[in-house]
Length: 452
Ligand SMILES: [Zn+2]
Image (cartoon, rainbow, N blue to C red; front, top):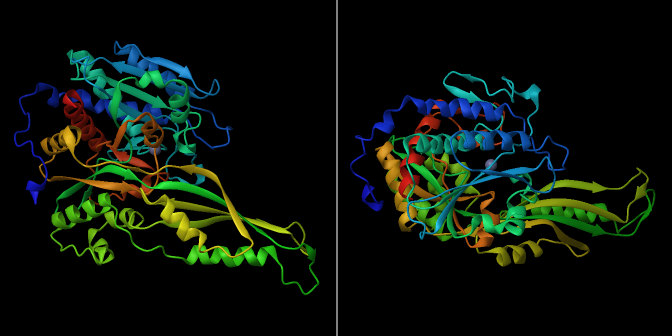
């Protein structure tokens, strides 16, 4: 099974950098970034990302680089870009996109302060520890060490620290794509969040989930209309009843399994690694045997549509003429039309919808030099590593950057303890990351990015 993947058989043990105790700086940087509250409420009321952008700019400047900090849509929404010149100026560039905002945290739910960046029990704790101030800190650590050791990567690397990823990137990635595309001039490939972390199997092999595809998103506002009337009458044309019927049909509907190429590739590789047979006619049977990877993968085998909000009426004895609901729909890569055809069939006459928010799906292949580089770097640091492509059920700033023709992968490498329920920590309570995982990520990124 190991022969499925390109292997770097001789880890570069002679490189003195890899025993540098300074790698633990990464935990301090992560902690300091967490202590800067950059909560994004999605409605413009949060503190913004300026404090973190100032931190990143000062850090890079202190390392001897020339970053540019700029505001996007307002003074509180700020980004930092820094181009690290490569040895080969003709080679196309690589962007590392990282976001500076975090989702809010409710203090009462947490066992530690969410915005202090506490380090204890070998972990860095706080909002952003895995999404994604961990990766911010790993990138900063790698480039600082390159600077102090005079290391230049093979090709141009553009570091892009962005605001507003958690609310769709209108003040961040999308703004940059529309207003400052020249920052990504000559860039053809990119890496970013939600990929590269390990999932340990029962046989102690570790899958490293490299994200090669993302589902598309459609937040749909449904409207049912009827005839307004007094609540005491016999009444057959009730918007609330009509909407309720449609909403329950959507909520209870299971879209059929459709295996896209990246999901099929993941299942084959994961089954091979786990030593269980893969039956393409019954992929769900296999999912249950994959341990913690199961929950992530289940939602990438089919479209989903979940009702999330309802509103109707203004008084107990008035039947309203209209009722509304929101549905969070996620469609499989390349199958948007197929999704909407199936969705339309669930609607009852008199119910219409329009998208409140929509974003594209992404899909690329798990091959080429960049993938070989990620694989080699992981294997050099972890002999039990089995890198596999996977599909993200959500979305990242990669969606926006892909509009510039950039081929993006999710690769923020972390070797994780087998018992850590990592995916539940994204936007979760007591978000935390092991210090040793951060140090592993720094070593892998260093290896990978030098020659990427
Ligand atoms: Zn994120």
